Image (spheres, rainbow, N blue to C red):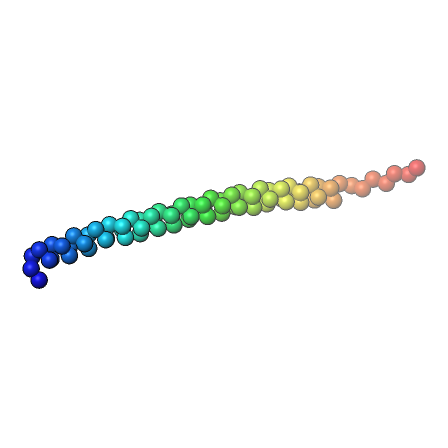
Length: 76
């Protein structure tokens, strides 16, 4: 191989590798966006679970207090 053919080969390889690098970079960027979206959904789900836990706890406290109250018998 002479120097001109080698130079041409390097030019072709370089020109083809640039789009591949862009495609791979876009792929990783898109994956990051998807992972971010998934994490945001998981955070929202955990917030809802925590809110539900607090509501259930409050409900149980009210029920417990209700059972502790003395029962009054009304005679009519």
